[in-house]
Length: 110
Image 1 (tube, one colour):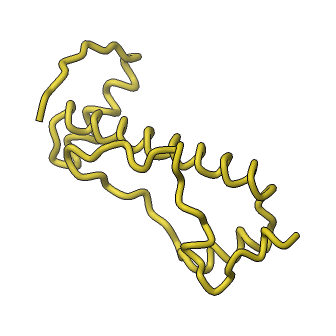
Image 2 (image 1 turned 120 degrees about the vertical axis):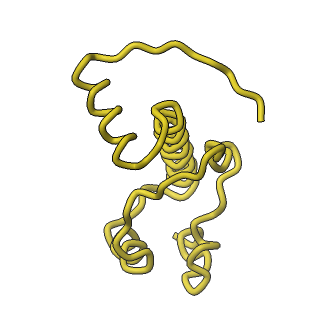
C-alpha cells in the first residue's frame, strides 16, 4: 500500500484527546487518524447517497426512517479496518429498496 505522509496541526486539547483515544485503542496516532478520516469519508459518501435518493424519490418519510431503524437495530460506530477505503462511490449509490426487498419500489408509484 502506498503511503502519503502529511503534516497536520491540532489544538492542544484535541491533540491530547487523539493521543489518549489512540492509546486506549492500542493504535498508533497515525492509524487512529487514518481510520477517523476514512470514517468521515464514508459518512460523506452516505450523505451524498441519501441526497441522490431524495432528489430522485423525494424526502424520506418518518415511517421509512422508523422502518429502517427497526431493521438495522441499534448502531455503534464501526471500527474501520486499517487501509479501509472511503466506502461506496456517491455517484452510484445502491437503491435503498434493494436493502428492503419486501417494500419493492412503492416510492416510484407515488
